Length: 479
Ligand SMILES: Cc1cc2nc3c(=O)[nH]c(=O)nc-3n(C[C@H](O)[C@H](O)[C@H](O)COP(=O)(O)OP(=O)(O)OC[C@H]3O[C@@H](n4cnc5c(N)ncnc54)[C@H](O)[C@@H]3O)c2cc1C
Image (cartoon, rainbow, N blue to C red; front, side, top):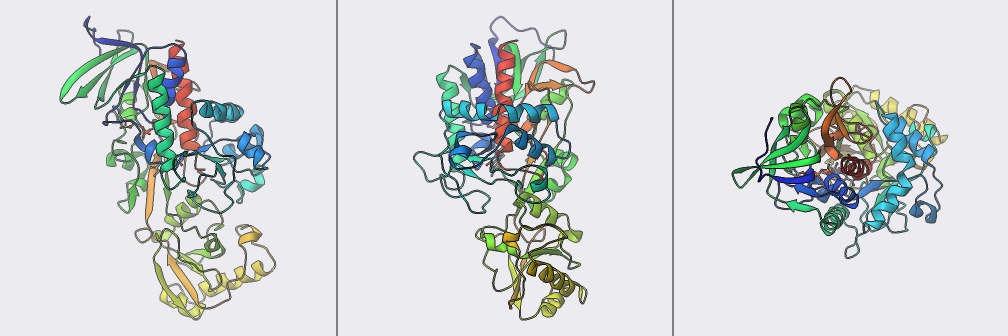
């Protein structure tokens, strides 16, 4: 929309749309650079999906916590891992993100987001303690373990007045960064839904139109507008277009209700284009870790993944099996109930042949898979999928149980990854590879580090949101 501002239109240096991790990080950095910042937030308070999150931030290369907990890491190994674990890695952004990771860790701590110098050693998808470090991806699972020296990089935000229980870390991160932005002078206007971007006669984005309690309002920005309004999981049409698996009704979308893709659509309307877009889809069957000693098989009775993979990878692989059918097969020695109960127990049988018949798997197929697996496990080997020795043991202790990991049976949840194509400084790019002047995007609405479920490491979303949010704020302030 082209618009000539009335004399009384509110004017700031920078307008930020959305007040989650990306928006607050952008605001902090822009205010620190001396800019006058207006944040427009659609909800009655900030936080967005950040406040729902686990509070894991993917950091490495030798952070204080990694060193104190006895883990060696380097930016180069972190770089190798992130390059190997994303389908279309953006080398420049990954390189910067890894080289700056220790400094970003220190920046977060200097804003009040701290990490405890302790390590959580067990397999979990979001450990229920305040320990500051955990394995949060596929670093020590094949094939990634062959491509980069493994190190845990999931840094979980410390919650001073809490215990680190589910969701506490994300809420604390969102709250701490928001308060910091406020303290530095950012003006936060809530219940303000941005509906359109304003461009000057050259096409430069220099303002926004927003709706507040039914009234349309205008705000102008001298330096730029930063889109930080989150992902698009709540927008069925967009999910269908960009990530069909996520639009499956059997996947529960998690996160903030206003993750409706408005940032991405606002960017597209002024010439922006999208980068790599994917989703995290998962239904963690662990903890307990003993379940990783079981085997995942499809309706043909065949294995398809190393079960010690990070849950995003093993569960997405299950989701993609023929007819969405997948079973976790255990014997009496390894069976325990999944802690979060997302996989129904189908039944238990005295013999593999009985189980095979009950699961309608062709006669002999499952028996062959298990016999083969047991032979190799006996030798501490898994030539097909390279499961680590720690989780390899023959399944020969009846009764045998099957947990249902099938789509529609197990509780699959998901959220989006990626959005607008951006430069290393978070400037929105057009289809020709030029910058859309005056417009930035960061966080879940931009394509930077996190790309898909198969290689996903928890913490990369909050990592990219805070890191590239900061870059957007700094670049816009210095324009
Ligand atoms: C359950 C769950 C757990 C997760 N755990 C982790 C984790 O541990 N580590 C990790 O890295 N990632 C995690 N993620 C992903 C991560 O939370 C998100 O990718 C990240 O929070 C995105 O931050 P953001 O600032 O881009 O968006 P958000 O935090 O969603 O903030 C966007 C804000 O924009 C506002 N908004 C929307 N539309 C408009 C509009 N038109 N005008 C004005 N304001 C608008 C929204 O109300 C919202 O407040 C998790 C996600 C979920 C759902």
